[in-house]
Length: 142
Image (cartoon, rainbow, N blue to C red; front, top):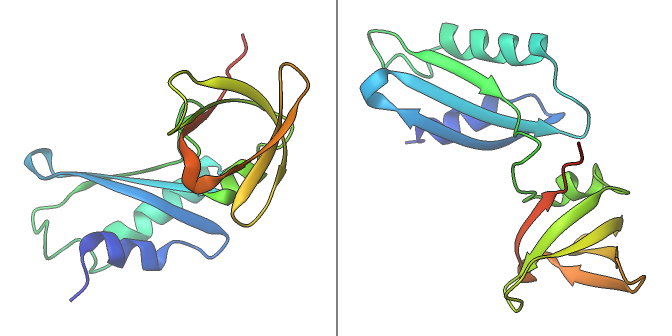
């Protein structure tokens, strides 16, 4: 038997990635977080929400109905998957490794299967394995 998370992940279009599902059973709400190489528009999120609501996926767990929100991660959300790093090449990232106490700033220059490369403020180019990264977020400039 599949969990609700697994059932929903299966119906996300192939050009998108299922990131997470957050349930609030007390309020009958589900938040589905998706991402993709390209921007995700309102029409896409609305059609996914409508499809899930009209399917049998949620009816057994929410027989009285459920509010479904489909969204992409915010600009402040940590990068987790290699494709997220790839779509942010040439952006500045705040990176924290498990080895360093303090995060540091890099300009993301390249992404590989198991790692990424960036240039530190000092001009030094370094490569980091994804498994070494505690967190990586886009530096937001105003």
